[in-house]
Length: 528
Image (cartoon, rainbow, N blue to C red; front, side, top):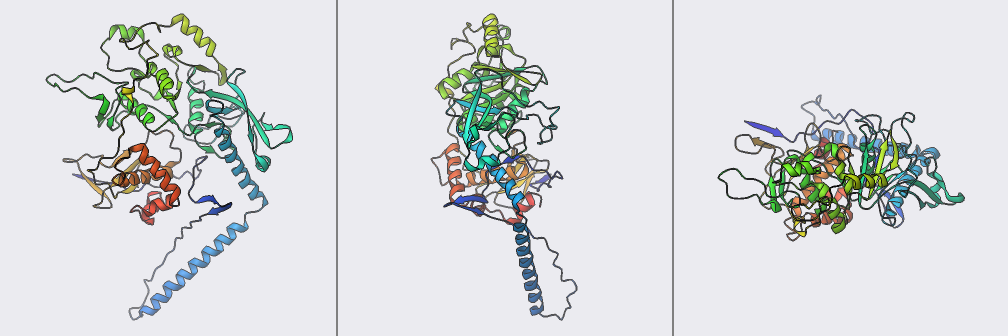
């Protein structure tokens, strides 16, 4: 039995675009000039079905030449017409777009100086119209964001120059004394461990999604365009069934039991599995975040493995031989030793109140600084004096260097050194096809039916739909193809090499030129 995979997905009927400004390789500045690459897709119906058998080749060639001339004329006319439409009003919209992106970039650059992971501006509209929409909810009923009166509320000033005139500011934000400096007020998420707490449906996950989206610049009108996050913040969640290869999860998973009669123990410093559980998948995701240089991890208990997140004193007393060291016990050590902050949404496990540096509470969509109250509750109920297996105070274990990620790299024995990339039907999955054919047939009896498939459906910060997903696939193919020529580089080093290649060779255009993808392959995969 065989199955063909790698068919291009159809383009969504939803004509709205994601409200994020992704880094583009078709628009760039060089020596003070703005350079733009414009690509035009021309669809024609070129039929010669009525050509007489006695027609000579010259007649056919002339028809082709005339058709090419017609296309060139139509293209020139289209470009001329499009440029003529750039009126004063349109130019104002373009400048507003540029000003909004510039503001976010400069605001994000200040986060390190105020020792912050993220900034959420007053007046922002965080909720979306629905779970399937990127558009902001109308206000009212949505409440504009307002930071609490506490040490977490700060004013930040950004020099905007002449672009200041094109910013549409949130209520409360304004240029300082008529100057070109724009001052905004909002909530600062400082370095360290931050909890977001509150009752169900009070807005905890909505705030975390705003922080997660802050790694991208947003377009004007998104509602969150003055809220930013450090670029290296990543979401970390459970991914039941994910593939794991040679990942060091020993800081979280150890002493795994083995079946009767099996003497070989599982080495969790090089943990591999084809179908990870919730806890081992999330442990792997934390290890990979550290491996790739994340400066902050964003965790929501709603999509996390319960036994990976926390383990209370009663369960420790009943089940003493436990293979899992919860994230709760590690977040302080990760920050103290590695400088990696963690923002955690939690609503059901009070043990988390023993570890944070600051606590944000949501109550009916309003924001409060609950740090002092949380510390009081922790002192009243804390079991922090209990020793955990002789390795330190529970909830605040030191980070052992043995838990540092391995330097991993692609294996050499695989058929993907000249791979083609396609998107699979249903969305969220990439297929790499080996050198032997444009599609790959999988024999269910002898082969893995997911061979060559990368499932990215639960990568929550991929907001750019099929185009961004396909770009990720091309980057994976490049890394695999060039790993042979960079034998001393691990995955992080290969990613740095990829980034340099994108800057050096004209961006994605140069990357495509180094891969076996044809123009037709690209257009088909993107649904055109």
